[in-house]
Length: 257
Length: 266
Image 1 (cartoon, helix red, strand yellow):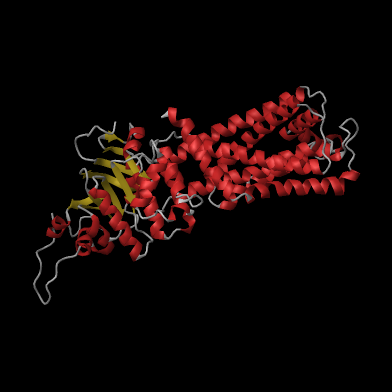
Image 2 (cartoon, chains in turn red, purple):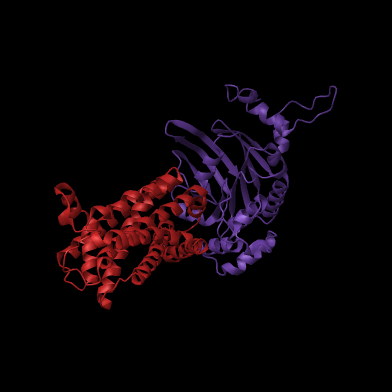
C-alpha cells in the first residue's frame, strides 16, 4: 500500500492540476488582488510613505513586494479549500477512499496542487512588479532562500486551508477563512515600518509571523544581512505547518475513516 | 492474488449494528450473497441501505457484528477488501472537468492496472462512450454519466460491485440503459449488490431480493419465494398475481404502521 503512495499522489495531483489548466481563471483571480494592491500602494499611497533609509534604492515597490507576495499566497489558498470542498461534496473522495489507494494521497494531491498553483501566481505577480520597476541585485542563492521561505509559507497556509476544505458546510464557508489571513500583512511591516504604529498595534505587528517573514525576504532581496529574523520566520512557518498538517490529517481520518 | 478463488459466499453479513449518535440505523443485519448473483437490497428512504453498503465498502465501521466480502473481514482487513470491491455511490461520482477517457485512465492508474489507456478505450467501447470519450463529463447526459460511473467501477476487475441506487434521478430511458449494463455485468460473473427503492427495479434485475426494513433484513429470497409468502392467488372478479409491490407492503407492514412484524406471515 505505502509503495503506491507516491504514484497515487502523482495520479491525483495530475487530476487537480488538469482542473486548474481548464479553468486558469483561478490563478489569474489569485494574482489580480495583490497586483491591484501593489498598483494602489506604489502609485497612490507610496509617494507619502516613508519607509526610512537603508532599504534598497529601487523605491517603495522594493519595500512592498515581500508583503504583496504573502497576500498573493493568502488569497491563493482559498482556492485550495474550495477545490477540496467540492471534492468532498461531490462524492469523488468517497469513490477514491473505497479504492485500494494510499489513504493520505487524496490530501497530499491537493497540497501539491496548491503549491504549484501558488507558485505560478507568485511568478505572475513578480513579473508585474518587474514591469513596475521592482529591481533586486540578489544572487541565485538569495533568490533560492526567498523561494524556500515562500514554499514553506505556502505549505503552512495550505494545510490551514485544508481544514475548512474538509469541514465547511457551504462553499462560502470554505473560502471565507482566508480573509483574516489576507489582512494579516496590513498589521505588519509589509506596507509601513512598524515604528510608526501605536503601542499595542506595534507590539502585535512585531510579534506576528508575517513581519519576520516579510523582513527576511526583504533583506534577502536587498542583499542585506538577514540575521535572527530568518530563523524566527522559519520557526513560524514550520510550526504552523506541523500543527495545521497534524490537525488536518486528524480531521480527515475522522471524516473518511 | 486474483487467481485464487475463495470458497463461500461473496458477501456474508452477520449481526451488523450501526447507530448515528443515538439513532440506531442497523439493528442486527444478516445477509449472504452468492457469488455471481445480483442481489437487490430493497427498502424505503432511510431504511439503512446506504449505511450497510458503506460498511461493506469500508467507508464506515460497524458498531457490532461481522461482515466479510470475498471472504475478507471488512473491519480487520479493509485494505484487502478494497482490492476486491468497487463502489458506485448514490450520486455519479465522476470528475466533471475531466473527459470520460481521463476519468477512466485516472481510476486505472489508482487501481494500478498495467495499461490504463488500453483499459479505458476498451471500456469506452463496451459502454458505447467511444465518441463521447474525448468530451468533458459535464457535457454528458444523466444516463451517460451513470454508464461512465459504472465503467469506472469495473476497472481492475473487482469481484464484488456495489451499486447504491444506480438509477435514482434518471429518466426512464436512462434507467433501461443502466439495467442493461447491470445485467451484462452479472453475466460476466461479477457479484452485484444493488440498493434501490424502486420495486420494479428489484423485480427486473435481481436474482434474489432482500428487504431491509427498520434496521433488519425481514425477508430474503427469489421473487418467486417472496410471492409465495402471500396467500395463493385469489380468484375473484379478476385474476391477479401479487406484484412485488404487494409483497413489499404486506411484509413491511401497512404503509408505515408501528410494528415491524405486522403482516409478516411466519
